Length: 320
Ligand SMILES: [Fe+2]
Image (cartoon, rainbow, N blue to C red; front, side, top):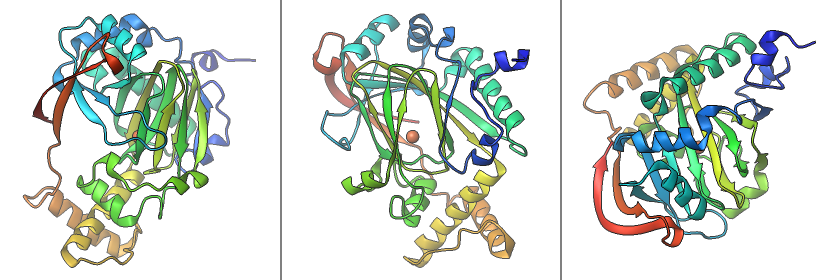
């Protein structure tokens, strides 16, 4: 018999053994958020209309088979939210709303509810610095091969996509590439990719009401089916993820200073680790900090009715 707490749960098919898999292996589960009013056209249109420049990205990349070319950065200007949604449905663009919780606290509550549920299920799990990013993307759009720095989960709300997940280690992500990603020197989407990597990917079909959580820094890419997609990602940190971040950050500094190409210890225990933790802390909070603000070159505007729903504009930069 279902208890009241089961009915209210966000994850519909959690089983006890999933606690042993969480964060260690890719875990595809069912969720109950596909029907949430937080993802209705009305709610999305309102978020698009109210998002300030530092709370969204709109991207475009030419359609090619396989891993797509470099993405372009755009802007949304003087359009009702509904017209933007139509432009996404008819075009070849994707919109990331990076701070919906700043525009409506319901999204902040949602991310809190999600992680409260994971923490209730997974013994010892304690998450922080949690974020939710909404993704609204055109039929057939692809997101290039990349890794993310924090823990990642992708939730499908509308439409369908394939998510290719690759092993979280060399050669799919080399130790120096991971270090440069963590130092902020490698854009997430500039990771080396070879077509044969696909032979080692696990491909997940994400349909409304399904999600995937995969191991830290696991490289992945996304291919939308031929339908408008509404999805969101959640990111989180734990002490364990932060230790991994600190050791790779310190290794990146050591590699820069010494020029070594040798493997460096990634252990997060013992004296060596504490030395690296001190190094990472000293650099991160000193003027040596190599992590820079990101600069974006905006060169198109969302333009309903135009091919791919974009129009070129004279490029300008913004820094975030
Ligand atoms: Fe990602």
